[in-house]
Amino acid sequence: MSTYDDGMAVRRAVLGDAHVDCATAATTEFTADFQDLITRYAWGEIWTRPGLDRRSRSLITLTAMVARAHHDELAMHVRAARRNGVTVEEIKELLLQTAIYCSVPDANTAFRIASRVLAEDGEI
View 1 (cartoon, helix red, strand yellow):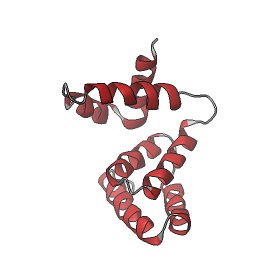
View 2 (cartoon, helix red, strand yellow; view 1 turned 30 degrees about the vertical axis):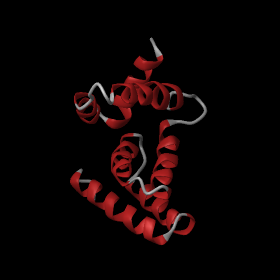
View 3 (cartoon, one colour; view 1 turned 60 degrees about the vertical axis):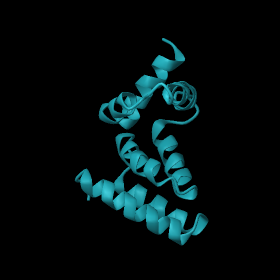
């Protein structure tokens, strides 16, 4: 299997088929190289490494999304974290931790986004 194929398999497992199908359907000639890059590099090289499990990678990724105010990506990765076994309680604790180390305003926004996503998915 190629790095691309490995990446696509992990991307689908973590983000879900619906999300990946939507992203690939929206790919244009202009964005195709970027989609290839993230599939091969982020998902095929990093998320497949044996040093951390997917659950740990999700926790790290959520923290990074809050710290950098990547709100659209945060919503996507809240769902991914749940798929990877992170509990709702653990997401709450992670967001409380980010209030201290990222900022209260960032955590406030993250709580709002996570609450919306978790409610949409019937988790809270």
